[in-house]
Every structure is written in structure tokens, then in C-alpha cells.
Length: 187
Image (cartoon, rainbow, N blue to C red; front, side):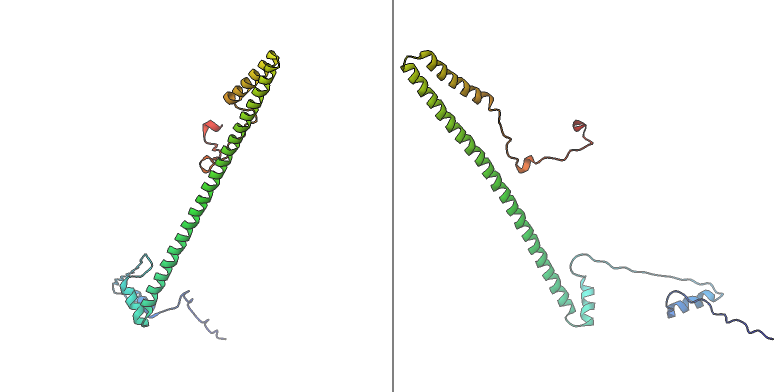
């Protein structure tokens, strides 16, 4: 019984064979010295437009391709500038709003202080009028204590401030900073 030899099929390469592969295989199989030179070239460019040589090749493929690429780059540039302008306008509007809010907050604080000063003036004037009336009626001690006590209390408030002092509103430059655990002052 004769056995038929198994088919000897070499494994197929994982890539598609081209004439170059065959030429390389033939050159390597020959007993003569082989010099193999491989050269690679890579071209890169930056910016919205390719170099003129590449634009010419696009135009060679189809007339007008280069012009379409240039028009596309111009539109993209216009769009980018419009977006940057919009972002700047938005940033300016936000800063103007913050400044206007700060101005209103500061003005409100001044208005409250002015109102408090006006009320304090009215209270002092009323106290002095009542104290003067007491003195006029012959109650010099009561009038003196009332008038002197009112003036001393007012002077104390102006020198030392009042106990219910509220914190000043926070502005953009006074925003709290996150604590840094590496900073020895905060530990």
C-alpha cells in the first residue's frame, strides 16, 4: 500500500504578497551577495493649508480641489476667530457684571453706614434736647447725666465700633483660597 505524501503547503504570510516581496525573496535565495537598500520618506506640515506642491497634486486629481481646500481653511479661520471673539465678549460681560455687583454691594454698605450715622445724629440731638429740657426744669443732675451719658455712649461706639459688626462683602480679589496641607502656616 502506498502512502501518498502529504501536501506540503508552506504557511501563508499574514500580509498580501506583492511583486516587491517576490523580488526580495528571489534576491535572498540567490547565492550571490545581496545588497538591500530600503528608503522611507515622511512629510508633515502644520497649519491649515498643505504646502503648494501638495495643493498642485490635489488639483491634478480634480480641477478645483486646491481652491476648495483654501476656501475650507478660510472658513475655518473665520469660524475660529468668531468663536474667540465670542469667548472674549462673554469674559468681558462676566467681569463687567462682577464689577457692577461689587459696586452695588459697596454702595449698599455705604448707604447703610450713612443711614446709621443719620439715625445716630438724630438720637444724639433728641437726647440733648431732652437733657436741655431737664436742665431747664431744674433737674440739672438728671439732664447732665442724660446728656453726658448719651455723648459718652456715642463716642464709645465711634471709637470701638458696635458689637454686631457684620463682615464686609467678599470681592473677586478676596475670594477664599483652598487650604494647602503642604503650607506649614496652616498646620
